Length: 91
Image (cartoon, rainbow, N blue to C red; front, side, top):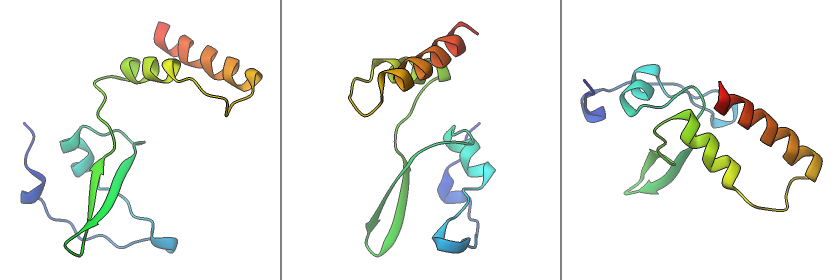
């Protein structure tokens, strides 16, 4: 059962350049893996961090990646990444 984050309190120290680690307990409560994106903003002089997006499964996320269109990859890079994602979807 997930518990509310407000009931959990942790004090963490930043690494160099302000990097922090989100405790595993918090990631578990939010359903985040080891790699994720956070949306950070300041509200009422507090740093607020929210998951940038929710995905139900790695296959759903992989499908979203396959649907992205753009010109920032070379065709060779794009084909390699697409092959890797398709291979993971078949697994």
